[in-house]
Image (tube, rainbow over all chains, first blue to last red; front, side, top):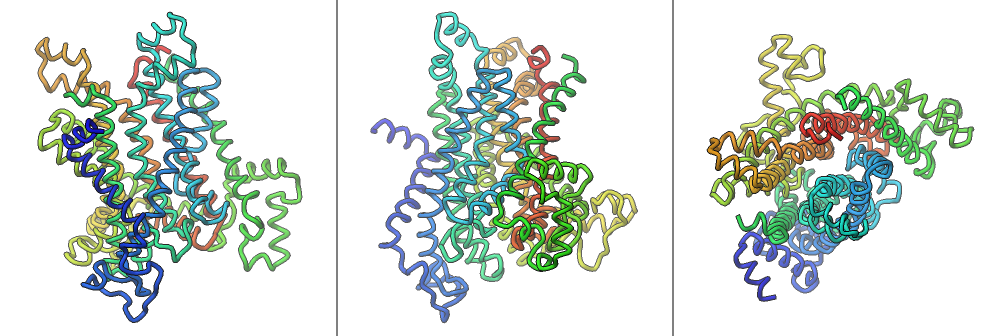
Length: 276
Length: 339
Protein backbone atom coordinates (compact mmCIF):
# COMPACT_ATOMS: atom_id res chain seq x y z
CA UNK A 1 0.00 0.00 0.00
CA UNK A 2 2.80 2.44 0.91
CA UNK A 3 4.71 1.34 -2.16
CA UNK A 4 1.67 2.01 -4.31
CA UNK A 5 1.38 5.48 -2.79
CA UNK A 6 5.06 6.24 -3.39
CA UNK A 7 4.74 5.01 -6.95
CA UNK A 8 1.72 7.25 -7.51
CA UNK A 9 3.57 10.30 -6.22
CA UNK A 10 6.34 9.62 -8.71
CA UNK A 11 3.80 9.38 -11.53
CA UNK A 12 1.85 12.64 -11.34
CA UNK A 13 -0.32 11.92 -14.42
CA UNK A 14 -1.46 8.58 -13.06
CA UNK A 15 -2.08 10.21 -9.69
CA UNK A 16 -4.18 12.86 -11.39
CA UNK A 17 -6.14 10.15 -13.21
CA UNK A 18 -6.80 8.27 -9.97
CA UNK A 19 -7.93 11.48 -8.25
CA UNK A 20 -10.31 12.44 -11.08
CA UNK A 21 -11.85 8.97 -11.21
CA UNK A 22 -12.20 8.94 -7.41
CA UNK A 23 -13.84 12.38 -7.46
CA UNK A 24 -16.45 11.35 -10.03
CA UNK A 25 -17.01 8.00 -8.31
CA UNK A 26 -17.49 9.62 -4.90
CA UNK A 27 -19.66 12.26 -6.55
CA UNK A 28 -21.84 9.58 -8.09
CA UNK A 29 -22.10 7.51 -4.90
CA UNK A 30 -22.90 10.47 -2.65
CA UNK A 31 -24.99 12.31 -5.25
CA UNK A 32 -28.12 12.16 -3.13
CA UNK A 33 -26.30 14.14 -0.40
CA UNK A 34 -24.14 16.56 -2.36
CA UNK A 35 -26.27 17.35 -5.40
CA UNK A 36 -28.04 20.67 -4.76
CA UNK A 37 -31.20 19.67 -6.65
CA UNK A 38 -33.27 16.63 -7.58
CA UNK A 39 -31.89 15.55 -11.01
CA UNK A 40 -35.40 14.89 -12.30
CA UNK A 41 -37.19 17.88 -10.76
CA UNK A 42 -38.54 20.17 -13.48
CA UNK A 43 -38.92 23.88 -12.96
CA UNK A 44 -40.08 25.42 -16.20
CA UNK A 45 -39.86 28.99 -14.93
CA UNK A 46 -36.09 28.43 -14.53
CA UNK A 47 -35.55 26.86 -17.94
CA UNK A 48 -32.40 27.40 -20.05
CA UNK A 49 -30.61 29.48 -17.44
CA UNK A 50 -26.95 30.22 -18.05
CA UNK A 51 -24.58 29.15 -15.25
CA UNK A 52 -25.18 31.36 -12.22
CA UNK A 53 -24.86 31.32 -8.45
CA UNK A 54 -27.95 29.15 -7.93
CA UNK A 55 -27.32 26.75 -10.80
CA UNK A 56 -23.54 26.67 -11.21
CA UNK A 57 -23.73 24.75 -14.53
CA UNK A 58 -27.04 26.23 -15.64
CA UNK A 59 -30.36 24.52 -16.31
CA UNK A 60 -31.78 22.59 -19.26
CA UNK A 61 -34.91 23.06 -21.35
CA UNK A 62 -37.11 21.76 -18.50
CA UNK A 63 -35.37 23.79 -15.83
CA UNK A 64 -33.50 20.80 -14.37
CA UNK A 65 -30.18 21.55 -12.67
CA UNK A 66 -27.33 20.39 -14.96
CA UNK A 67 -24.76 20.01 -12.16
CA UNK A 68 -27.03 17.68 -10.18
CA UNK A 69 -27.84 15.68 -13.29
CA UNK A 70 -24.16 15.28 -14.20
CA UNK A 71 -23.35 14.03 -10.67
CA UNK A 72 -26.14 11.46 -10.85
CA UNK A 73 -25.06 10.56 -14.39
CA UNK A 74 -21.91 8.91 -13.02
CA UNK A 75 -24.14 6.23 -11.52
CA UNK A 76 -25.03 5.08 -15.02
CA UNK A 77 -21.99 5.61 -17.24
CA UNK A 78 -19.18 4.50 -14.90
CA UNK A 79 -20.47 1.03 -13.93
CA UNK A 80 -21.84 0.39 -17.43
CA UNK A 81 -18.44 1.00 -19.04
CA UNK A 82 -16.47 -0.96 -16.43
CA UNK A 83 -18.64 -4.07 -16.50
CA UNK A 84 -18.84 -4.15 -20.30
CA UNK A 85 -15.07 -3.84 -20.73
CA UNK A 86 -14.38 -6.52 -18.12
CA UNK A 87 -16.52 -9.11 -19.87
CA UNK A 88 -15.28 -8.13 -23.32
CA UNK A 89 -11.63 -8.45 -22.20
CA UNK A 90 -12.05 -11.85 -20.61
CA UNK A 91 -14.06 -13.33 -23.47
CA UNK A 92 -11.93 -11.79 -26.21
CA UNK A 93 -8.58 -12.68 -24.62
CA UNK A 94 -9.53 -16.31 -24.09
CA UNK A 95 -10.70 -16.69 -27.66
CA UNK A 96 -7.69 -14.89 -29.11
CA UNK A 97 -5.12 -16.67 -26.95
CA UNK A 98 -6.38 -20.16 -27.75
CA UNK A 99 -6.60 -19.28 -31.45
CA UNK A 100 -3.06 -17.92 -31.56
CA UNK A 101 -1.57 -20.74 -29.53
CA UNK A 102 -3.34 -23.65 -31.21
CA UNK A 103 -3.11 -22.34 -34.74
CA UNK A 104 -4.44 -24.38 -37.66
CA UNK A 105 -8.12 -25.03 -38.17
CA UNK A 106 -9.16 -23.83 -34.70
CA UNK A 107 -7.37 -20.54 -35.35
CA UNK A 108 -9.02 -20.09 -38.74
CA UNK A 109 -12.44 -20.88 -37.32
CA UNK A 110 -12.18 -18.47 -34.40
CA UNK A 111 -10.64 -15.73 -36.49
CA UNK A 112 -13.37 -15.98 -39.14
CA UNK A 113 -15.93 -15.69 -36.33
CA UNK A 114 -14.06 -12.67 -35.01
CA UNK A 115 -13.94 -11.12 -38.46
CA UNK A 116 -17.67 -11.57 -38.95
CA UNK A 117 -18.29 -9.54 -35.82
CA UNK A 118 -15.58 -7.02 -36.57
CA UNK A 119 -16.86 -6.55 -40.09
CA UNK A 120 -19.99 -4.94 -38.78
CA UNK A 121 -19.60 -1.25 -38.02
CA UNK A 122 -19.50 -1.01 -34.22
CA UNK A 123 -22.28 1.43 -33.61
CA UNK A 124 -24.61 -0.14 -36.17
CA UNK A 125 -24.19 -3.66 -34.76
CA UNK A 126 -24.66 -2.24 -31.28
CA UNK A 127 -27.74 -0.39 -32.52
CA UNK A 128 -29.18 -3.52 -34.06
CA UNK A 129 -28.58 -5.54 -30.87
CA UNK A 130 -30.01 -2.97 -28.48
CA UNK A 131 -32.94 -2.38 -30.82
CA UNK A 132 -33.55 -6.13 -30.98
CA UNK A 133 -33.34 -6.64 -27.21
CA UNK A 134 -35.23 -3.43 -26.47
CA UNK A 135 -33.65 -0.20 -25.25
CA UNK A 136 -32.35 -0.48 -21.68
CA UNK A 137 -29.09 0.00 -19.81
CA UNK A 138 -28.36 -3.72 -19.48
CA UNK A 139 -29.07 -4.39 -23.15
CA UNK A 140 -26.82 -1.51 -24.16
CA UNK A 141 -24.06 -3.13 -22.04
CA UNK A 142 -24.64 -6.50 -23.72
CA UNK A 143 -24.35 -4.72 -27.07
CA UNK A 144 -21.05 -3.19 -25.91
CA UNK A 145 -19.63 -6.61 -25.00
CA UNK A 146 -20.73 -8.14 -28.30
CA UNK A 147 -19.06 -5.39 -30.33
CA UNK A 148 -15.88 -5.08 -28.23
CA UNK A 149 -14.63 -8.64 -27.66
CA UNK A 150 -13.37 -9.17 -31.26
CA UNK A 151 -10.63 -6.54 -31.04
CA UNK A 152 -9.27 -8.18 -27.88
CA UNK A 153 -9.34 -11.56 -29.58
CA UNK A 154 -7.43 -10.21 -32.54
CA UNK A 155 -4.83 -8.32 -30.52
CA UNK A 156 -4.36 -11.22 -28.11
CA UNK A 157 -3.91 -13.66 -30.98
CA UNK A 158 -1.23 -11.45 -32.53
CA UNK A 159 0.56 -11.11 -29.19
CA UNK A 160 0.48 -14.85 -28.53
CA UNK A 161 1.73 -15.67 -32.02
CA UNK A 162 4.69 -13.32 -31.76
CA UNK A 163 5.39 -14.53 -28.21
CA UNK A 164 5.22 -18.27 -28.82
CA UNK A 165 8.25 -18.33 -31.13
CA UNK A 166 10.53 -17.04 -28.33
CA UNK A 167 13.18 -19.32 -26.92
CA UNK A 168 11.69 -19.47 -23.44
CA UNK A 169 8.50 -21.01 -24.84
CA UNK A 170 10.47 -23.59 -26.79
CA UNK A 171 12.48 -24.24 -23.64
CA UNK A 172 9.46 -24.81 -21.42
CA UNK A 173 8.06 -27.06 -24.11
CA UNK A 174 11.26 -29.06 -24.10
CA UNK A 175 11.08 -29.32 -20.32
CA UNK A 176 7.75 -31.05 -20.74
CA UNK A 177 5.36 -28.30 -19.66
CA UNK A 178 1.77 -28.83 -20.77
CA UNK A 179 0.18 -26.60 -23.38
CA UNK A 180 -2.16 -25.11 -20.80
CA UNK A 181 0.76 -24.34 -18.51
CA UNK A 182 2.82 -22.78 -21.29
CA UNK A 183 -0.10 -20.63 -22.38
CA UNK A 184 -1.17 -19.54 -18.90
CA UNK A 185 2.16 -19.30 -17.07
CA UNK A 186 4.66 -18.44 -19.78
CA UNK A 187 2.92 -16.64 -22.63
CA UNK A 188 -0.07 -14.83 -21.13
CA UNK A 189 1.88 -12.89 -18.47
CA UNK A 190 3.99 -11.41 -21.26
CA UNK A 191 0.89 -10.37 -23.18
CA UNK A 192 -0.93 -8.98 -20.17
CA UNK A 193 0.57 -5.50 -20.14
CA UNK A 194 -0.47 -4.82 -23.73
CA UNK A 195 -3.98 -6.13 -23.21
CA UNK A 196 -4.41 -4.06 -20.04
CA UNK A 197 -3.36 -0.91 -21.87
CA UNK A 198 -5.86 -1.73 -24.60
CA UNK A 199 -8.53 -2.42 -21.99
CA UNK A 200 -7.98 0.88 -20.18
CA UNK A 201 -8.05 2.68 -23.50
CA UNK A 202 -11.19 0.76 -24.33
CA UNK A 203 -12.88 1.73 -21.11
CA UNK A 204 -13.10 5.22 -22.50
CA UNK A 205 -14.26 3.76 -25.77
CA UNK A 206 -17.02 1.89 -23.96
CA UNK A 207 -18.22 5.05 -22.19
CA UNK A 208 -18.20 6.90 -25.51
CA UNK A 209 -20.04 4.13 -27.35
CA UNK A 210 -22.55 3.86 -24.53
CA UNK A 211 -23.10 7.59 -24.91
CA UNK A 212 -23.47 7.12 -28.66
CA UNK A 213 -26.21 4.55 -28.10
CA UNK A 214 -27.98 6.94 -25.75
CA UNK A 215 -27.64 9.61 -28.42
CA UNK A 216 -29.57 7.31 -30.74
CA UNK A 217 -32.19 6.65 -28.08
CA UNK A 218 -31.05 3.07 -27.44
CA UNK A 219 -29.72 3.45 -23.91
CA UNK A 220 -31.42 4.47 -20.69
CA UNK A 221 -34.90 5.99 -20.77
CA UNK A 222 -35.13 9.59 -22.03
CA UNK A 223 -35.52 11.42 -18.73
CA UNK A 224 -32.61 9.69 -16.98
CA UNK A 225 -29.55 11.85 -16.38
CA UNK A 226 -27.12 9.97 -18.64
CA UNK A 227 -24.14 12.00 -19.90
CA UNK A 228 -24.38 11.12 -23.58
CA UNK A 229 -28.11 11.66 -23.58
CA UNK A 230 -27.67 15.10 -22.01
CA UNK A 231 -25.11 16.11 -24.66
CA UNK A 232 -27.43 15.05 -27.47
CA UNK A 233 -30.35 16.94 -25.93
CA UNK A 234 -28.09 19.99 -25.89
CA UNK A 235 -27.47 19.76 -29.64
CA UNK A 236 -30.96 21.14 -30.21
CA UNK A 237 -30.07 24.12 -28.03
CA UNK A 238 -27.00 25.40 -29.79
CA UNK A 239 -26.92 28.83 -28.10
CA UNK A 240 -27.27 27.27 -24.65
CA UNK A 241 -23.79 25.74 -24.86
CA UNK A 242 -23.73 24.75 -21.19
CA UNK A 243 -26.37 22.08 -21.77
CA UNK A 244 -23.98 19.89 -23.74
CA UNK A 245 -20.56 21.22 -22.69
CA UNK A 246 -20.76 20.19 -19.00
CA UNK A 247 -21.99 16.59 -19.38
CA UNK A 248 -19.46 16.22 -22.19
CA UNK A 249 -16.77 17.59 -19.91
CA UNK A 250 -17.66 14.92 -17.35
CA UNK A 251 -17.26 12.18 -19.95
CA UNK A 252 -14.07 13.73 -21.28
CA UNK A 253 -12.37 14.02 -17.87
CA UNK A 254 -13.35 10.50 -16.83
CA UNK A 255 -12.16 8.95 -20.08
CA UNK A 256 -8.94 10.97 -19.98
CA UNK A 257 -8.34 9.99 -16.35
CA UNK A 258 -8.69 6.32 -17.24
CA UNK A 259 -6.23 6.80 -20.07
CA UNK A 260 -3.71 8.31 -17.63
CA UNK A 261 -4.22 5.31 -15.35
CA UNK A 262 -3.79 2.98 -18.32
CA UNK A 263 -0.44 4.56 -19.14
CA UNK A 264 0.66 4.20 -15.53
CA UNK A 265 -0.36 0.55 -15.39
CA UNK A 266 1.54 -0.10 -18.60
CA UNK A 267 4.74 1.29 -17.11
CA UNK A 268 4.16 -0.63 -13.91
CA UNK A 269 3.43 -3.93 -15.63
CA UNK A 270 6.33 -3.59 -18.02
CA UNK A 271 9.38 -2.32 -16.13
CA UNK A 272 11.28 -2.71 -19.38
CA UNK A 273 9.64 0.39 -20.81
CA UNK A 274 9.39 2.18 -17.48
CA UNK A 275 13.08 2.23 -16.64
CA UNK A 276 14.04 4.09 -19.78
CA UNK B 1 4.26 -18.76 -50.53
CA UNK B 2 4.08 -16.42 -53.53
CA UNK B 3 1.93 -13.36 -53.12
CA UNK B 4 -0.81 -14.30 -55.61
CA UNK B 5 -1.37 -17.60 -53.80
CA UNK B 6 -1.47 -15.75 -50.50
CA UNK B 7 -4.04 -13.27 -51.80
CA UNK B 8 -6.11 -16.05 -53.35
CA UNK B 9 -6.04 -17.89 -50.03
CA UNK B 10 -7.18 -14.75 -48.19
CA UNK B 11 -9.97 -14.11 -50.70
CA UNK B 12 -11.16 -17.69 -50.33
CA UNK B 13 -11.17 -17.30 -46.57
CA UNK B 14 -13.13 -14.07 -46.90
CA UNK B 15 -16.06 -15.88 -48.53
CA UNK B 16 -17.24 -17.66 -45.36
CA UNK B 17 -16.95 -14.34 -43.53
CA UNK B 18 -19.13 -12.64 -46.10
CA UNK B 19 -21.65 -15.49 -45.84
CA UNK B 20 -21.52 -15.20 -42.05
CA UNK B 21 -22.25 -11.50 -42.30
CA UNK B 22 -25.27 -12.07 -44.51
CA UNK B 23 -26.47 -14.75 -42.09
CA UNK B 24 -26.20 -12.38 -39.13
CA UNK B 25 -27.97 -9.65 -41.10
CA UNK B 26 -30.65 -12.13 -42.17
CA UNK B 27 -31.24 -13.28 -38.60
CA UNK B 28 -31.42 -9.72 -37.31
CA UNK B 29 -33.73 -8.48 -40.04
CA UNK B 30 -36.07 -11.48 -40.05
CA UNK B 31 -36.07 -13.13 -36.67
CA UNK B 32 -35.46 -10.23 -34.38
CA UNK B 33 -38.09 -7.53 -34.94
CA UNK B 34 -41.44 -8.51 -33.47
CA UNK B 35 -43.13 -8.13 -36.85
CA UNK B 36 -40.76 -8.33 -39.83
CA UNK B 37 -43.52 -7.24 -42.19
CA UNK B 38 -44.12 -4.06 -40.24
CA UNK B 39 -40.36 -3.50 -39.86
CA UNK B 40 -39.73 -3.79 -43.59
CA UNK B 41 -42.82 -2.15 -45.03
CA UNK B 42 -43.67 0.50 -42.49
CA UNK B 43 -46.95 1.56 -41.01
CA UNK B 44 -48.54 2.89 -44.18
CA UNK B 45 -47.81 0.07 -46.65
CA UNK B 46 -48.82 -2.76 -44.35
CA UNK B 47 -52.50 -1.83 -44.63
CA UNK B 48 -52.30 -2.41 -48.39
CA UNK B 49 -52.84 -6.15 -49.15
CA UNK B 50 -51.22 -5.96 -52.63
CA UNK B 51 -47.96 -4.56 -51.26
CA UNK B 52 -47.95 -7.14 -48.46
CA UNK B 53 -48.54 -9.96 -50.95
CA UNK B 54 -45.76 -8.72 -53.28
CA UNK B 55 -43.34 -8.40 -50.38
CA UNK B 56 -44.19 -11.93 -49.22
CA UNK B 57 -43.46 -13.31 -52.68
CA UNK B 58 -40.31 -11.23 -53.28
CA UNK B 59 -38.62 -12.44 -50.09
CA UNK B 60 -40.17 -15.94 -50.03
CA UNK B 61 -41.81 -15.36 -46.66
CA UNK B 62 -44.29 -18.22 -47.18
CA UNK B 63 -41.33 -20.65 -47.38
CA UNK B 64 -39.39 -22.25 -44.49
CA UNK B 65 -36.49 -20.22 -43.01
CA UNK B 66 -33.56 -21.90 -44.88
CA UNK B 67 -35.32 -21.27 -48.20
CA UNK B 68 -35.94 -17.69 -47.12
CA UNK B 69 -32.21 -17.29 -46.53
CA UNK B 70 -31.42 -18.56 -50.04
CA UNK B 71 -34.01 -16.15 -51.49
CA UNK B 72 -32.46 -13.40 -49.39
CA UNK B 73 -28.97 -14.24 -50.71
CA UNK B 74 -30.06 -14.32 -54.34
CA UNK B 75 -31.81 -10.98 -53.86
CA UNK B 76 -28.58 -9.59 -52.39
CA UNK B 77 -26.52 -10.89 -55.30
CA UNK B 78 -28.82 -9.01 -57.66
CA UNK B 79 -28.23 -5.87 -55.60
CA UNK B 80 -31.67 -5.96 -54.02
CA UNK B 81 -31.25 -4.67 -50.47
CA UNK B 82 -34.94 -3.96 -50.05
CA UNK B 83 -36.89 -0.71 -50.17
CA UNK B 84 -36.26 2.09 -47.75
CA UNK B 85 -39.46 2.86 -45.86
CA UNK B 86 -38.60 6.50 -45.49
CA UNK B 87 -37.28 7.46 -48.92
CA UNK B 88 -39.44 4.87 -50.76
CA UNK B 89 -36.47 4.11 -53.01
CA UNK B 90 -34.33 0.94 -53.24
CA UNK B 91 -31.77 1.00 -50.41
CA UNK B 92 -28.96 0.41 -52.92
CA UNK B 93 -29.85 3.62 -54.80
CA UNK B 94 -29.90 5.56 -51.56
CA UNK B 95 -26.50 4.17 -50.61
CA UNK B 96 -25.00 5.05 -53.99
CA UNK B 97 -26.17 8.61 -53.44
CA UNK B 98 -24.81 8.89 -49.89
CA UNK B 99 -21.64 6.79 -49.91
CA UNK B 100 -19.30 9.13 -51.83
CA UNK B 101 -19.78 11.88 -49.24
CA UNK B 102 -18.78 9.50 -46.45
CA UNK B 103 -15.77 8.14 -48.33
CA UNK B 104 -14.58 11.67 -49.05
CA UNK B 105 -14.84 12.59 -45.37
CA UNK B 106 -13.36 9.29 -44.13
CA UNK B 107 -10.45 9.45 -46.57
CA UNK B 108 -9.44 12.97 -45.63
CA UNK B 109 -9.74 11.96 -41.96
CA UNK B 110 -7.62 8.82 -42.24
CA UNK B 111 -4.92 10.68 -44.18
CA UNK B 112 -4.90 13.36 -41.50
CA UNK B 113 -4.84 10.76 -38.71
CA UNK B 114 -2.08 8.77 -40.40
CA UNK B 115 0.27 11.66 -41.11
CA UNK B 116 -0.19 13.35 -37.75
CA UNK B 117 -0.51 10.14 -35.71
CA UNK B 118 2.50 8.22 -37.03
CA UNK B 119 4.65 11.35 -37.11
CA UNK B 120 3.77 12.37 -33.57
CA UNK B 121 4.15 8.79 -32.32
CA UNK B 122 7.66 8.36 -33.72
CA UNK B 123 8.81 11.78 -32.50
CA UNK B 124 7.29 11.16 -29.10
CA UNK B 125 9.06 7.79 -28.73
CA UNK B 126 12.43 9.09 -29.91
CA UNK B 127 12.30 12.06 -27.56
CA UNK B 128 10.88 10.10 -24.67
CA UNK B 129 10.19 12.27 -21.59
CA UNK B 130 11.27 15.39 -23.47
CA UNK B 131 8.69 18.23 -23.28
CA UNK B 132 7.79 17.44 -26.92
CA UNK B 133 6.83 13.91 -25.81
CA UNK B 134 4.53 15.29 -23.12
CA UNK B 135 2.84 17.69 -25.56
CA UNK B 136 2.29 14.91 -28.12
CA UNK B 137 0.98 12.53 -25.46
CA UNK B 138 -1.31 15.16 -24.01
CA UNK B 139 -2.83 16.06 -27.37
CA UNK B 140 -3.26 12.40 -28.32
CA UNK B 141 -4.98 11.87 -24.98
CA UNK B 142 -7.43 14.65 -25.73
CA UNK B 143 -8.08 12.92 -29.05
CA UNK B 144 -8.91 9.54 -27.55
CA UNK B 145 -10.79 10.95 -24.57
CA UNK B 146 -13.11 13.55 -26.05
CA UNK B 147 -16.52 12.33 -27.26
CA UNK B 148 -16.73 12.99 -31.01
CA UNK B 149 -20.09 14.72 -30.87
CA UNK B 150 -18.94 16.87 -27.98
CA UNK B 151 -15.84 18.02 -29.90
CA UNK B 152 -18.05 18.72 -32.90
CA UNK B 153 -20.25 21.05 -30.85
CA UNK B 154 -17.25 22.84 -29.35
CA UNK B 155 -15.63 23.30 -32.77
CA UNK B 156 -18.86 24.58 -34.28
CA UNK B 157 -19.50 26.99 -31.43
CA UNK B 158 -15.95 28.38 -31.57
CA UNK B 159 -14.88 28.30 -35.22
CA UNK B 160 -18.23 28.73 -36.94
CA UNK B 161 -20.58 30.52 -34.57
CA UNK B 162 -18.18 32.80 -32.67
CA UNK B 163 -15.11 33.33 -34.89
CA UNK B 164 -16.70 32.73 -38.28
CA UNK B 165 -13.47 31.11 -39.58
CA UNK B 166 -15.04 27.88 -40.74
CA UNK B 167 -18.03 27.42 -43.04
CA UNK B 168 -21.19 25.96 -41.57
CA UNK B 169 -22.62 22.46 -41.89
CA UNK B 170 -23.05 20.66 -45.22
CA UNK B 171 -20.66 19.89 -48.09
CA UNK B 172 -20.91 23.26 -49.87
CA UNK B 173 -22.24 26.76 -49.21
CA UNK B 174 -25.91 26.95 -50.09
CA UNK B 175 -25.24 29.53 -52.86
CA UNK B 176 -23.04 27.04 -54.77
CA UNK B 177 -24.43 24.17 -56.82
CA UNK B 178 -22.70 20.76 -56.68
CA UNK B 179 -20.04 20.06 -59.35
CA UNK B 180 -20.88 17.73 -62.28
CA UNK B 181 -20.93 14.08 -61.15
CA UNK B 182 -17.85 12.02 -61.99
CA UNK B 183 -16.80 10.34 -58.76
CA UNK B 184 -19.22 11.81 -56.20
CA UNK B 185 -16.26 13.41 -54.38
CA UNK B 186 -16.96 17.14 -54.51
CA UNK B 187 -13.26 18.03 -54.28
CA UNK B 188 -12.21 15.77 -57.16
CA UNK B 189 -15.26 16.52 -59.30
CA UNK B 190 -14.91 20.28 -58.98
CA UNK B 191 -11.17 20.09 -59.74
CA UNK B 192 -11.88 17.95 -62.82
CA UNK B 193 -14.48 20.47 -63.98
CA UNK B 194 -12.06 23.33 -63.30
CA UNK B 195 -14.47 24.97 -60.85
CA UNK B 196 -11.82 26.17 -58.41
CA UNK B 197 -14.25 28.32 -56.48
CA UNK B 198 -16.33 25.24 -55.68
CA UNK B 199 -13.17 23.21 -55.01
CA UNK B 200 -11.89 25.53 -52.29
CA UNK B 201 -15.36 25.82 -50.82
CA UNK B 202 -15.64 22.03 -50.64
CA UNK B 203 -12.19 21.79 -49.03
CA UNK B 204 -13.20 24.42 -46.49
CA UNK B 205 -16.32 22.46 -45.62
CA UNK B 206 -14.23 19.31 -45.15
CA UNK B 207 -11.87 20.83 -42.57
CA UNK B 208 -13.98 20.88 -39.39
CA UNK B 209 -15.72 17.50 -39.82
CA UNK B 210 -12.43 15.84 -40.82
CA UNK B 211 -10.66 17.27 -37.78
CA UNK B 212 -13.44 16.09 -35.51
CA UNK B 213 -13.72 12.67 -37.12
CA UNK B 214 -9.94 12.16 -37.21
CA UNK B 215 -9.41 13.22 -33.58
CA UNK B 216 -9.94 9.78 -32.09
CA UNK B 217 -8.00 7.83 -34.72
CA UNK B 218 -5.11 10.30 -34.54
CA UNK B 219 -4.90 9.80 -30.80
CA UNK B 220 -4.95 6.02 -31.05
CA UNK B 221 -2.41 5.88 -33.89
CA UNK B 222 -0.07 8.20 -31.98
CA UNK B 223 -0.28 6.06 -28.86
CA UNK B 224 0.19 2.76 -30.66
CA UNK B 225 3.06 4.10 -32.78
CA UNK B 226 4.76 5.50 -29.69
CA UNK B 227 4.54 2.28 -27.69
CA UNK B 228 5.53 0.12 -30.68
CA UNK B 229 8.56 2.33 -31.31
CA UNK B 230 9.55 2.30 -27.63
CA UNK B 231 9.32 -1.47 -27.63
CA UNK B 232 11.55 -1.75 -30.70
CA UNK B 233 14.01 0.94 -29.65
CA UNK B 234 14.87 -1.06 -26.54
CA UNK B 235 15.90 -4.14 -28.55
CA UNK B 236 19.49 -5.27 -28.73
CA UNK B 237 19.75 -4.97 -32.49
CA UNK B 238 18.95 -1.27 -32.27
CA UNK B 239 21.79 -0.85 -29.78
CA UNK B 240 24.02 -2.83 -32.16
CA UNK B 241 23.02 -0.55 -35.03
CA UNK B 242 23.88 2.48 -32.93
CA UNK B 243 27.15 1.08 -31.65
CA UNK B 244 28.38 0.25 -35.12
CA UNK B 245 28.10 3.94 -35.85
CA UNK B 246 24.96 4.25 -37.93
CA UNK B 247 23.41 7.67 -38.06
CA UNK B 248 20.50 8.07 -35.63
CA UNK B 249 18.17 8.81 -38.54
CA UNK B 250 18.99 5.47 -40.17
CA UNK B 251 18.62 3.64 -36.87
CA UNK B 252 15.18 5.08 -36.25
CA UNK B 253 13.71 5.03 -39.73
CA UNK B 254 15.24 1.87 -41.18
CA UNK B 255 16.00 -0.38 -38.24
CA UNK B 256 13.41 0.55 -35.67
CA UNK B 257 10.44 1.77 -37.67
CA UNK B 258 10.37 -1.18 -40.06
CA UNK B 259 9.74 -3.48 -37.12
CA UNK B 260 7.22 -1.18 -35.49
CA UNK B 261 5.08 -1.17 -38.61
CA UNK B 262 3.03 -4.31 -37.89
CA UNK B 263 1.10 -3.05 -34.86
CA UNK B 264 0.67 0.29 -36.64
CA UNK B 265 -0.86 -1.39 -39.70
CA UNK B 266 -3.22 -3.35 -37.45
CA UNK B 267 -4.41 -0.26 -35.65
CA UNK B 268 -4.95 1.61 -38.91
CA UNK B 269 -7.16 -1.23 -40.12
CA UNK B 270 -9.07 -1.03 -36.84
CA UNK B 271 -9.24 2.76 -37.07
CA UNK B 272 -11.34 2.54 -40.17
CA UNK B 273 -14.11 0.99 -38.11
CA UNK B 274 -13.86 3.78 -35.55
CA UNK B 275 -13.99 6.27 -38.39
CA UNK B 276 -17.25 4.90 -39.72
CA UNK B 277 -18.61 4.64 -36.19
CA UNK B 278 -17.71 8.26 -35.64
CA UNK B 279 -19.28 9.11 -38.98
CA UNK B 280 -22.77 8.34 -37.67
CA UNK B 281 -22.35 11.04 -35.03
CA UNK B 282 -20.10 13.47 -36.93
CA UNK B 283 -22.24 13.49 -40.05
CA UNK B 284 -25.40 13.99 -38.02
CA UNK B 285 -24.05 17.10 -36.36
CA UNK B 286 -22.41 18.57 -39.48
CA UNK B 287 -25.44 17.81 -41.68
CA UNK B 288 -23.06 15.86 -43.91
CA UNK B 289 -25.19 13.96 -46.43
CA UNK B 290 -23.31 10.67 -45.99
CA UNK B 291 -24.11 7.13 -45.02
CA UNK B 292 -23.74 7.85 -41.29
CA UNK B 293 -26.44 10.48 -41.33
CA UNK B 294 -28.54 8.16 -43.49
CA UNK B 295 -28.25 5.40 -40.89
CA UNK B 296 -29.00 7.80 -38.08
CA UNK B 297 -32.16 9.01 -39.79
CA UNK B 298 -33.09 5.42 -40.61
CA UNK B 299 -32.69 4.44 -36.96
CA UNK B 300 -34.82 7.30 -35.66
CA UNK B 301 -37.60 6.43 -38.09
CA UNK B 302 -37.15 2.64 -37.56
CA UNK B 303 -36.37 2.24 -41.28
CA UNK B 304 -35.14 -1.35 -40.86
CA UNK B 305 -34.27 -2.18 -44.51
CA UNK B 306 -32.13 0.95 -44.67
CA UNK B 307 -30.31 0.10 -41.41
CA UNK B 308 -29.57 -3.50 -42.40
CA UNK B 309 -28.73 -2.62 -46.00
CA UNK B 310 -26.22 0.03 -44.96
CA UNK B 311 -24.62 -2.15 -42.32
CA UNK B 312 -24.26 -4.97 -44.87
CA UNK B 313 -22.54 -2.68 -47.35
CA UNK B 314 -20.24 -1.19 -44.70
CA UNK B 315 -19.48 -4.69 -43.43
CA UNK B 316 -18.43 -5.73 -46.94
CA UNK B 317 -16.13 -2.71 -47.13
CA UNK B 318 -14.60 -3.87 -43.84
CA UNK B 319 -13.86 -7.33 -45.16
CA UNK B 320 -12.02 -5.77 -48.07
CA UNK B 321 -10.10 -3.55 -45.62
CA UNK B 322 -9.08 -6.58 -43.55
CA UNK B 323 -7.93 -8.28 -46.73
CA UNK B 324 -5.74 -5.28 -47.49
CA UNK B 325 -4.27 -5.37 -43.98
CA UNK B 326 -3.44 -9.06 -44.44
CA UNK B 327 -1.73 -8.35 -47.74
CA UNK B 328 0.22 -5.51 -46.11
CA UNK B 329 1.29 -7.91 -43.37
CA UNK B 330 2.58 -10.24 -46.04
CA UNK B 331 4.55 -7.47 -47.67
CA UNK B 332 5.92 -6.13 -44.37
CA UNK B 333 6.73 -9.28 -42.42
CA UNK B 334 9.06 -11.82 -44.03
CA UNK B 335 8.12 -14.40 -41.37
CA UNK B 336 4.61 -14.67 -42.85
CA UNK B 337 6.07 -15.27 -46.30
CA UNK B 338 8.17 -18.11 -44.93
CA UNK B 339 5.29 -19.75 -43.06
